[in-house]
Length: 395
Image 1 (cartoon, rainbow, N blue to C red):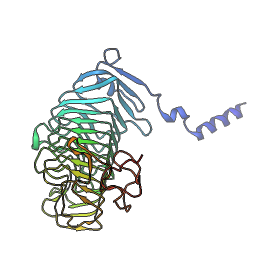
Image 2: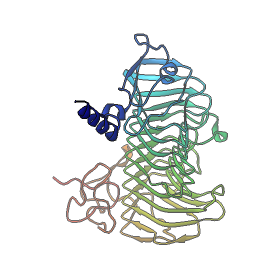
Image 3: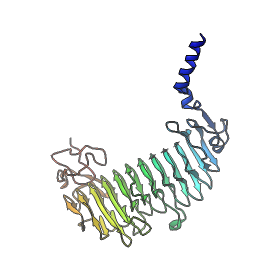
Image 4: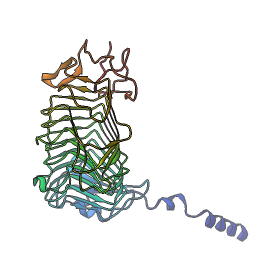
């Protein structure tokens, strides 16, 4: 019996800790609010362990939040509003710092005198049904952060101190990578809406967002590479030099390169400058740009404005509706575009779907055309691909 017991102990030692031990302590739910064990969010956050959920009763909690702990792979620390939105108000906003494996759901940050949210060097973050409601500087700011998902968010009223504010409403900056922004509303902010900047290998996807009423541009890519912008509605920039979608190389950039940006299935309308602009501040290169199946219409300074002179690689302009009239395609290989009104359904009411009999129906090229449209309709729906952001539905 002693021999068998010794063998059992040896096997256990070789096998290592039990599954429960390997996973760490059992996850807990820490309740915050009038009926919870913690009156404030900060107190719960300071004792949270990987795998814990901080359940925050709907309401307003002053003082902001400074995160001081990390989750772990497969065991994030979750901050979740219960019964509605939990509002973190106060000067400090949400300071994530370099902490990682964190998730925020049904939480809004309000009234920050600095950034709404600031993360630097963090990774594996999720912001789901998250909000920023007013901040003097940028709203949700990622610097050198990786693997971030931002979904169904509402960001408004940021950059209230104007052009002297640091960063933008939603900034993906300075080496941040593998970020996805989808289903968000980014509106009525004092600077750019969604901004990707100084990311040489960004691998960023920006899709199915509504980005309107910002100073502008509504979506902006500056000196970055590997960015997809698709199925967004952008409109109503307020500053006369700001387009709905802007591509740029600014002098702050070290690489002076913008490359591998794909823009497709977007509607850009009602902007104070162009629907789409390309701009280099002094010197810089734009390379391998693909602009396909977009609709630009109702913009104050035309559909496309190019103020850049160094392009390399393959740059494609195809299947776009330039509803504001003819454009100068500059260095782009341009084909199957339509200048003017091809027969919109109801442009006076902002409906830029294609009407029956539109000249853009079945008139596009299949080459590099997306397999769906802005509404998610499969392409092609008829005998050929339609031009513009919308594929006309067939009976």
